[in-house]
Length: 337
Ligand SMILES: C=CC1=C(C)c2cc3[nH]c(cc4nc(cc5[nH]c(cc1n2)c(C)c5CCC(=O)O)C(CCC(=O)O)=C4C)c(C)c3C=C
Ligand SMILES: [Fe+2]
Ligand SMILES: [Fe+2]
View 1 (cartoon, rainbow, N blue to C red):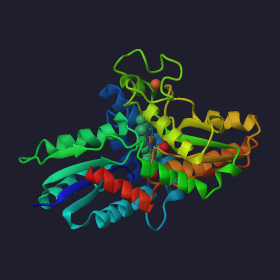
View 2: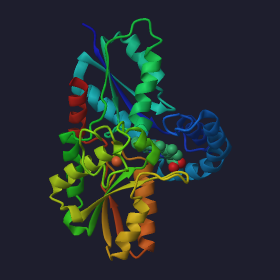
View 3: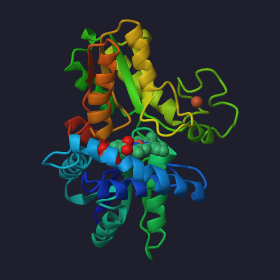
View 4: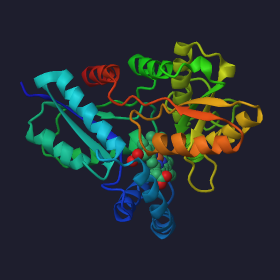
């Protein structure tokens, strides 16, 4: 019997924090039609003509703030996760790591699985909540690449793991280290998405953003909605910590461009909480399985400074799943089941 192949795929990061590598990364990332879902000509003009030239120098500076001797935290933690998963799964499995954008590429990782003569491939996009821009994009590229193989082994995909109980435990355990009861309010700040991407995943056409609080709870209609899955993740972590509804807010960060994105925006929530006199905030970022630019810079530095300027005192990030042994156990479950 051959080994079973497991492919972990996270988003990606530049090869270095230098402007030229950030340009290559942003170009590949934002030219993906599932990330900026507008007609190709408009996307090309917007990405190559405006976003990449103007945003890259700024983004390069931000990456330099979080880059250390181990490299980009997202890649560094992803490599540890893959190594620990391989150790836990043992010799019957071959685990490979890939990034959707830049390196190590999905193509190279699939070639390694092919060379290992694996009898099957389990793809785990490392995004707890399904979104077309993240999980969907990984699935599409893997399917495109595999479609060119002569022999296509049995392939399966993890679609989402927003309610994985081991993952929920890790977020809760990581928060307990910070004594959540000493904070005035808790935020679950998810990476944002353009509203039109949420609307596209509502197959009824009359539910999402048409009904009040459409995605505050998960149901049969919105079960693949990124926002609904995010609210569900947040409610499970809150329940584990015994947080009542008035103690936490689900919000969305990292908006890009002028179009409406899923709301409320984290920056607006910071303003509201500061105006209410809240001083100390504990912030989860449960759309990611590893600390990255969005957590280590946007939350830890930018939101902290923004909140202090508004009269607040402290914004504390709850560290991500990173190399927590229970998260590796969660990955073992996902790989096997
Ligand atoms: C249209 C723009 C973007 C969409 C849609 C989007 C969705 C999306 N992104 C992640 C995860 C990550 N994004 C990260 C960085 C990042 N994201 C965008 C834009 C969109 N993301 C940009 C331009 C950047 C780069 C930084 C910047 O210039 O602001 C990261 C961090 C990577 C790292 O190296 O640390 C992650 C992770 C998800 C899960 C998602 C859809 C739900
Ligand atoms: Fe992003
Ligand atoms: Fe909705």
